[in-house]
Length: 306
Image (cartoon, rainbow, N blue to C red):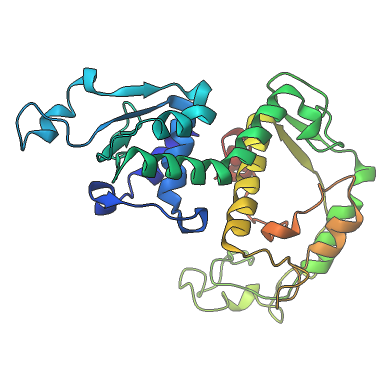
């Protein structure tokens, strides 16, 4: 999780090197939120941006660890009050200790305090959700999971019985479209002369009217459900963050109100809620298929899906 935040932090532009008067929460960028979320886990440091032994040596002063004040992550809800208590109208620089390109510069400690408050207003629900999930998994994990009440960290592959295949068979039937693409391998034995040409629509043997042609239906042979405590908590936290950011921008139209048709999977997943966790319309959440081979699917299941 930290590495993903660091990658977002590295997208910071010259904005971080200039004075910034941060406005309301709706004006915050992804970089602002990424830095603050990292700071809430690691800590935040600040110093007077004009601190220097001699004029013009402010940059040298930043390398002096004694000039930085460290705000501990466990007291992140008190950061704004600490910064606001500084009455001097001097510029302030903040940073996440030990992480490059996380510095922000503000016109005053009060401006830095407003930035903290705005970030916290959006990200606090995410952090609260994660803390609750760590204490009580039942508030986070789907009820139908085998590990739904497990308070420990877990990662397991659950083989579903045949009598639970029906929702997946319906998904295949509802979402199937007889469309062949250029990446579909030639099904003929031996392959035809177009097999390696990657022509639009695939070779003639893989098309709906070909020989042997495109499959007309699919049969579900096996279903594995991956139950990963860390991955699910991370997903729920990110979903909560998207919801809060949309509310911050005033973009709260649900999927039912949006001018687009629902996903083909929505009818089945809504009906079989003991197989599919309910969707959050406020984040335009939906279930999607990802076609791949068995080996790649198991590799995805054994690692972290991004």
